[in-house]
Amino acid sequence: MKLSIYSLKKVLFQGSAQLLNCKTQLGEITVLDNHEPLITVLTKGTMKVVRLPMSNETAGKEEYFEIKSGFLEVRQDNEVRCIVEQ
Amino acid sequence: MSIGGYIKMESPQNIKKRLKSVNNIGQITKAMELVSATKMRKSQEIALASRPYAFAGLELLANLSVLEKSAKLKMPELFEVRKKINKVLFIVVSSDKGLAGAFNSSVFKKFELHLKAEKEDWKHEEHLYLAVGEKANAYLNKKGFKVIKKFVHAGDYTTPEQVLPLSDYIIKGYLNKDFDRVIAVSTHFKSALKQEPHIRRVLPIDFEHVKDTIKEIIPEKGKFAELIKEQNINFVPDEKKVAEYLIEPNPQEVIEKLAEHLFFMQVYHLILEANASEHSARRMAMKTASDNAKDLSETLNLQYNKSRQGKITTEIAEISAGAEAQQ
Image 1 (tube, each protein chain N blue to C red):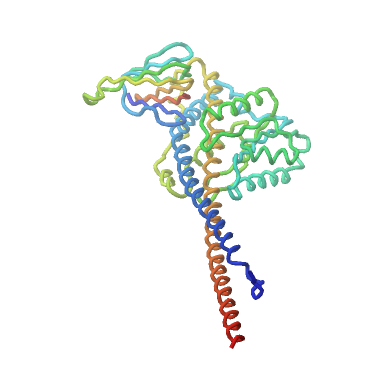
Image 2 (image 1 turned 120 degrees about the vertical axis):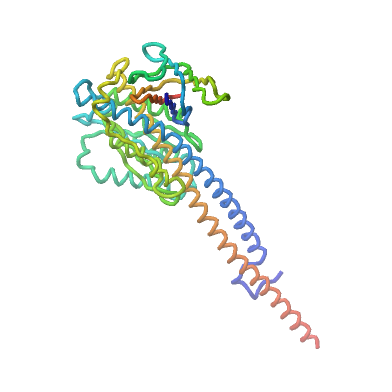
């Protein structure tokens, strides 16, 4: 899926990802490919992103972002967007 | 030492002293000019870095506001225009430091004009003031206005963390009905050479106003202006698509939270824009000052040479007069 994570200061992540794990108001969720359209509120916690193995270098590489709050929007065309406050 | 013959002309020593200090001033203003130019570019870059966030947030809001039309959801209080306006909060955004040309005074002038222009309708409204920057605080206090809070010493580049208490304070006060409308007076960064004071209503939130603010992140002319062409963002959502969204925990809560975030973002941008304007105004002021210093030092140099020459001439005249008398 296409994932972008934006904060006010910079673009934290932009590219293809396998998996996104984050905390929402209703509990922790993991977004995988072709998730149904969703809009939700993120809460304080760590977001985990697993990169899509494009080449050997970035294969399965995990990235973590500390956030204070934010929003998650899963769109129809396998596109996920987050705006977060750090 | 006798200088009888040239009272009109200053002594070379005095001119030399003045010349030195003028040159020093020139050096200082030149240095400040260069520093401000770098700071201006950096603050512009900071403003641009938050663009993706701003656009994503706005699009999300556009999607959600479709739900409002289908009556599934009430717009949050931050969007609602109150019928009776009793108290109005003015946010005056200025700089902490001076030496920035007309930057601060043009904001204050605009503010005064605004107060004068619509005085009739506002007779029943109570005005409150909030100062951003030391200069605004000093100005409002001098005018005897009621400053309920001040936010100062943000440094050269304002960070989101610094703006958060400000926007929280305003939102709390607004929801508490401490004020019914919030108006911001700040500077709009048109280009490195041109900045304009602007008056905007920030609360209740108007979708169009937020959109304008975000569009203005990109200056109209100059280094970053070409970015405008790249952006092609659609703020008219597809209603069918929106209906399919699963919204957790519920649309009402999401849109309320989003409204707060958008407001925070708007305040952040107002201040960032003021930052960029401050630095470029200072750069221009310092450029004029160093140009003036250069002119002045040239004139003084000429004066110094003339006065020195004059002194030599008189001395020779005195000597030859003395020699002639002895013959």
